[in-house]
Length: 154
Image 1 (cartoon, rainbow, N blue to C red):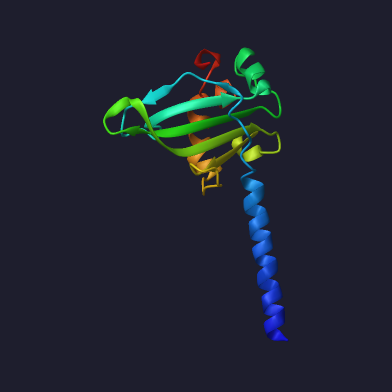
Image 2: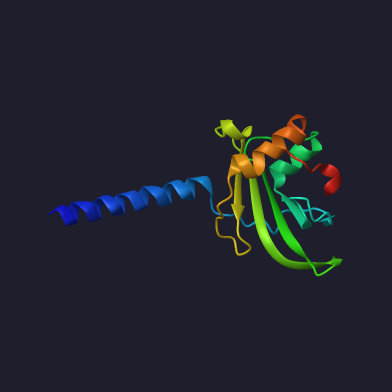
């Protein structure tokens, strides 16, 4: 009896943990058909953003960019991060990460944005949305609706 109760409790705990993890990192949208930015290269190896980046914006996010970085609810921005291949920054190396930002007014602790990180193959990563994302966005671009990129990037 105790074993069955313990097993039921463990199953329930795993279900809650999985549901919580899924809630913090929604399924990565099919973003490849969205508007794609110009190629961005950061060659400073000390930078958190060292590598090559492409930004994708859905139609709502494009409206936000055109409005001077005032994004409507539901806007989605995806950033693909690639390694630099060797010492040649003109060549995209392998993809190393994908990040999603979604305008969501319920996300009070991150300025009204949901941040989610994914591995190169689109599986949720262990990205901490406050520590890994929002702290820098808040410090650097709070006056731009917490978005680094602009319409000039597209």
